[in-house]
Image 1 (spheres, rainbow, N blue to C red):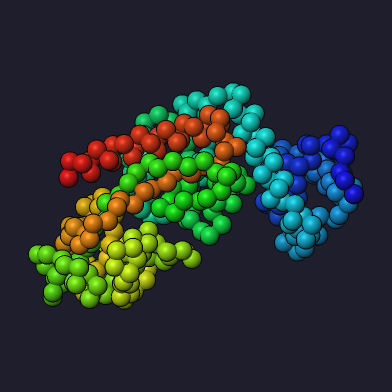
Image 2 (image 1 turned 90 degrees about the horizontal axis):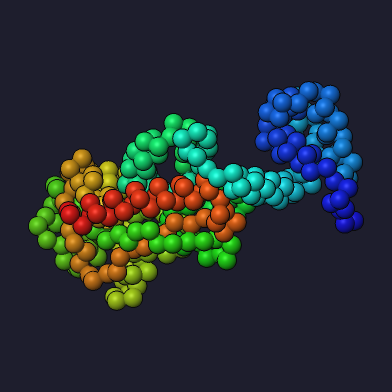
Length: 309
């Protein structure tokens, strides 16, 4: 049966969202500044409107029915779009407005970009909170469904609902321990392929480096260990005979700390683009626009530092 939106009280949907996120009627009522009787009445109206119990009581609170689980993401996305649309009419003043930004990124962003970004944000506002989340296979959906605001990644999310721009291009460097028994002053292509490599997960796709290597020589690296983040990669190489390929700026930042030698890549390879992505639905959102510019400015300073090194 098609739902008649003209007969629906849209004020009920924030109630639905709050219950889904808190798992308790009392906490949802507290979040929305509602009394318990008003919350109970709203839940009953939701059930009547959607033709489903929606929530079942348990010893710890309530659990959602299958129908509630199915419609939750759509309702959450719709509410997020409405909130963004209304806030865009007011503008965004970081000096006076509290706001939480949700950024999807890897630890490259945390090590390289975050320090400068925090410096910029803190100099303009004491009311901004940055919440960083790891990039997963469904991260593009998080942007689309308003569960995240911005994503920075070397993998481009190819979806027509997502806006993207290249904000940085990183040069690839090879790192090896300063105590490596064979690789010291130079690194040849034979050295590169004969050594065992420490690598990051490919997340179901070829890493940018692997795509590059397939074209000229059609050879594969010998994988010695796979780790989950760059900090582990640097530590593994610094304490073993493994080598690894990492972005130049990251390598320069941590070479001394991990006792690493840096080498130019033994092949002519293109730079790896870093993409900044966000939902097109938030193109005109003033808060999102503000954070995008802070990230651009931070990366501009980083790129200038790279040139001088």
